[in-house]
Image (tube, rainbow, N blue to C red):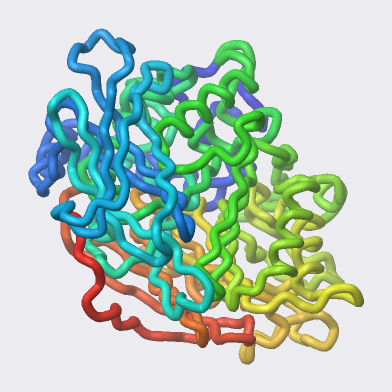
Length: 580
């Protein structure tokens, strides 16, 4: 994207540069005015909103455990436990702090199964991460930390099932949690679900912007765009201090990947739209600082300490689900191409021609593509879930079959902007003479601040499945399905009458559901027979609220690879107790 001649401010809003073609950015069509949509109450309401949130029942951690506790990256025999021990004086970094930890099978800690001592090191911003091993599969545990004479809140976590033990799973799916854009009411609702096995977070866990840039409900800390290691650490600390975020983290293990805002907007391997080389340091140093803070503050494992950008990981829930989490930003992504075709009333789009058809352009890189193909082809699990950042389904504003060019596309930052790379993944799903087709693949996506349910097909505007097309009435020709979770707080498109959603569905017949307005999360209920996705939303993010609504449900049956309408599922009886 073009930049103005003057050095941009650290508080420059996304996609609002003078003279910049805003529609070429990934938010383009959906959020060019996103910041304005959430700014109505203004900064005068910040203190009141924060006060309301704090009155909602935070469990407290004294002066030491101000950032709560968290767990993540569960496996069948282990899980990561996390906390931060705040030094007693303000003169950080200070020295290391000895921290105890204990794990039990009951919330009163009568049946302790593991314990130990760890250092909250100043070099790691006084965060603590314990990889507790030797645990039993498919088991709920309770844990807490101690330091400087104080105890942390009690956390609750769960290991993954093994073998054929997994008959049913319940997973929440979240993304795009912008602290400045509003209160994390959706996190609070996730925290209250005792029936969940884990929470999947698909990126944009935090945002880099300064005040009044991309949301004005709460003031970011630091009060400017985060660029340095200290900046990223402070922003992580602010998010972990939020009571609703703490509630979600202490009740459920988190499986997370990053998208772009964990570094900065529209990132790719060698730069980002929201990075000015020189004025904001060098891109490699900025990425290194952002990822150092991320690994310190997030309850996840670092797959390769020699290469922090390598974040792809896999999680096996017995023989029921293989969950593969993909890294799509910093390791190998090619730079986004501009969308330059004017579309009256809708900004600009692009067609699949010229550099868009360059087979060397990639989201995942050759190594990760090969790793993913091997996992999909070799998995013995009934369901193959892909956790990833950007939308996989075609999204067009002018339809045409591939034989006629495919039409005009909207967003070059999603898989649409990397068509050859997407075709290579479709080749894996379709199979060949050496490999059978891959069935039961469910793609889970965040990023776009809206809810979507789609059949996945290479040629959705060709109505003939016999020639590689897609029958919208029957779903024939679909190779997999995709569920896109709306944001926790980040703004979508103001479409109260649903006219934009209706238009998009009319030209994208493979898309069965679109919600451009509401904030919330998805709930997956998985059995051997089907995967159901429920779209849950909250009524507001500008005030504390306990109201949530299920707006739609879709499912995919075993072996069908296509969506059908569904209904709210019944939670399992007597789930393990939430942490007190």
